[in-house]
Length: 113
Length: 125
Image (cartoon, rainbow over all chains, first blue to last red; front, top):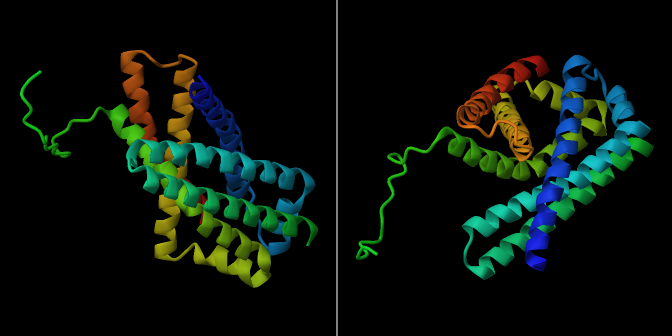
């Protein structure tokens, strides 16, 4: 039961984050196509603005969660040997957490710097 | 049960996978690719924000042929994953589950993703 509940929870998170990620990507692509930033100050100012930088931080967290559920599903489906699977899952977690911290750092620097 | 004549050799070129299956595999492949592209994209984001020179490097670098090929792959992965994802969300709420529409929407996703990628690439560079 708890395993099934965990699966259901992952299923719901995958979809909730998907909706936010999709909306944010459309917003980002729309801005880049319709009104591309012409120099670094404008780009920093846009990304560092309170609204966009908060939305971007939320995007980072949603992406980490979404990518984790997706990659985990792929590993569970295709990688049988338990040690290899656990090793790859650990590697994915390290990569995702590292990238998450890096992204947060970039966004904070854009906001305060 | 038939006596086993395994191992079965599956010739993947002879397996006629329905379009929804093709789309589904591409949804997974594009998702995995997007995961792998996170670090290089973060690097480019940081570079573009670092200085006027860094910004110019990223902006002007987009016009070279290898960069455009890379951008196309990124946009295709992003858009295929997005379109297929929207289709799955609609199926979750029972939109488009009937036979013909189920197949048509899978075709639509698979074909429109590369087309939209080309259009978006032209618009961005």
